[in-house]
Length: 363
Image (cartoon, rainbow, N blue to C red; front, side, top):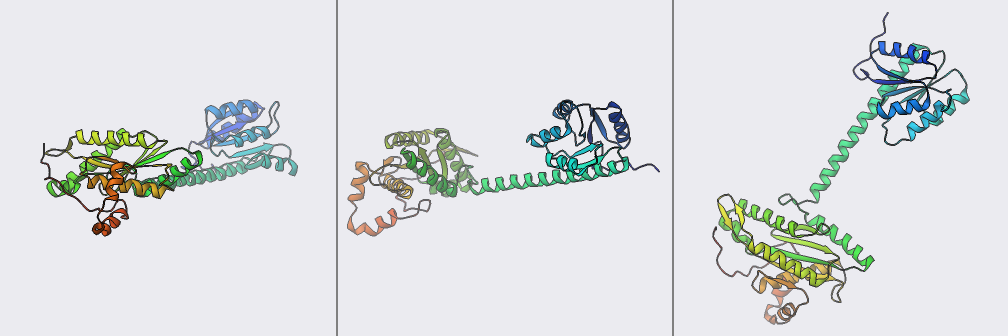
């Protein structure tokens, strides 16, 4: 009765037969090809390694006793090569001894047959190992899919869905990482807190879809002006935060001013027209006598942004500047409650608006 050809999981699987006797290779080649396998032969260890490099087998039938490089060394090299996938190895030898079998398994062999080979037994072992290989490949693919999905979910959890830049969670993580790095290396770090002036009027006048387009274009401007090592993110609403490692206060102010000019000169496009907006920025830097940690630097930048809004918007204010000090020190006592609320509000939440002028129309 003829033996059934291999199933789909074995169909046209590649088998490499390694034996220093050509007759043995040809006999096994004929028998295995008759079962539907694709078979190549090699007559020594180095030839086998060369075949594996250019023709990846699904299974290797490997003779132990060979001149120059024996089967044990071949299987050691195959199993030690991390660039190769899992390749089952069946070792064959005329020496039916426990010591020889143990040596083969310790070298990395997956199964063992003795000569003269019982082909029915060999065929069963080949099928079994190919099934194991298929299961391992399916498991590896599943693990890769899960890893990719986890990476995607992590990216989504740290990315603002509208603008595609860092969200608040990501910014807070990056702030602490970058601040600790700067602290260890005694390097400066600056942050720029900014938002779009009168953004509420955009939504009220043109609708939220236009407001979304403005936010996306605004984020694009920030990304275009920032360096590769900077972090740019949406902190909340129309408020954005930029983290500038290795940047002193004067340089951070210059950078923020360049951002402000770019936004002021930009025409925001939407379906049906264009409009213009301005931005306000608050800038803070560590090291500074008034800043002890990352949270203090963030609060200082936010306080400076509040002062920029109070002073008329479309400006950059550094947290230790004369105008910042003069404004914060000249607050009337009657406004103490208002000032306290403003200075302790959470960045990214709505702040009191000081309107000045009507909303611009479309260009």
